Image (cartoon, rainbow, N blue to C red):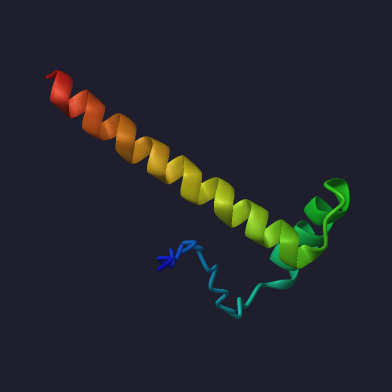
Length: 71
């Protein structure tokens, strides 16, 4: 009798959440200019800015914890 082997492949499923962001005209103009400079569409540029800020804050939290442990 032959035994069957079952293999499970774990996949990470990315969930996408949409949000609406209200911008003043000057903010939107600045976003369009930044997007144009970086050759991105405004939605991708906003996502890029958000990711950079999240990364910066996570790095700062890690540095803050490290500094407290050294004291």
